[in-house]
Image (tube, rainbow, N blue to C red; front, side, top):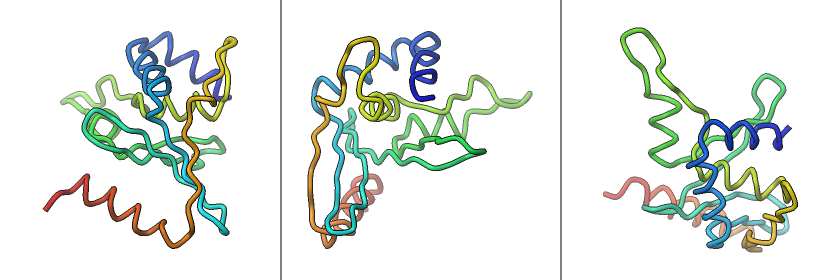
Length: 138
């Protein structure tokens, strides 16, 4: 399923696909695993900060959301007088995570570029608070 989505993105928005590849190669994709709960979060370092990329189930399929302004604009706010104009459900941060989770595509092994970070459960709330503070400075 992910590979089909990636192929679609690669054809429709090759610039976003290439930015995702660059993010992976620059080791800007981080997977935090918290112990002992095994909860995990994915962060992608972008041009202006670190963005949280989450997954959720929608109509029986896994979908993704990102905390970056690009995703928010293109997925939530991009409308016109006659309705939605060129709305898209992804940004390069999401595509980078998708590639990382897919592991490989066409012979390229993307999972080797992911920084996996193990933390204690106690750090979870602190990390989330830092992300929120960075996104909404006082």
